[in-house]
Image (cartoon, rainbow, N blue to C red; front, side, top):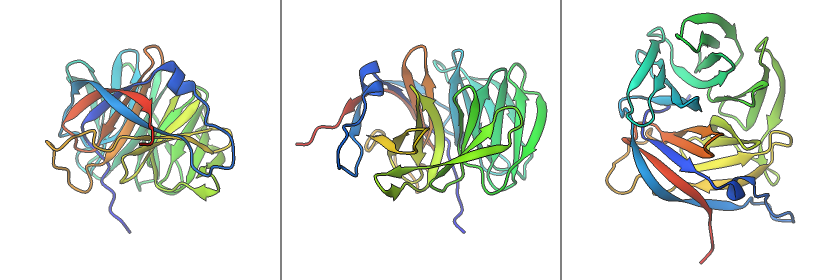
Length: 266
């Protein structure tokens, strides 16, 4: 079994124009979805010691779940300064994974312990735990249900009240399953998903599971940062009011604000 160390890191912020976010892929016989790339707007600070597994934005703050046994936590972080304004640690034998903010709660998965946590968002005190089968990877919400990845090509849909599984979404690009779905985020009616050990983000239809587009973040770190094999892109957070998409990677040292633009062939 592969040992998965999901990440800390550089958070990267993506500012998408409404036109790019809402643009529909061209229909036709193409088996590949439209490709997008990025332009860097600015950089923001981030705790490079955080092994980021989950990442989201709510009411002016980042909420970040970190992994690794003995280092797993849930944090509230000031985007401008990178300062941790609230933090709760998981038990040292647990490996924290994806998080989502739903209403007045924060929900956090663990990797192989089959247990999730629901916290009060105001002070991070534990409200309840819940169980699930298999591995926990990424987590997001559309405000009604929770959407959970487990490293496969499927996304589980969980009832927001009971946290029981309702159905699964089979994610595909054309007729090919898209495996290794990791950290998730809802943005403008689509699920954005990191692909583990990849610099690409898939834009997924929550209804059909079809990949509607790919955002390629290759080269965003530049040559100044030497990554190890586990410091990969992981973590997506969308500010629906400001129309900003934030992304982070495992053990990355900085945050980037970028603009997403269509990729043109040369």
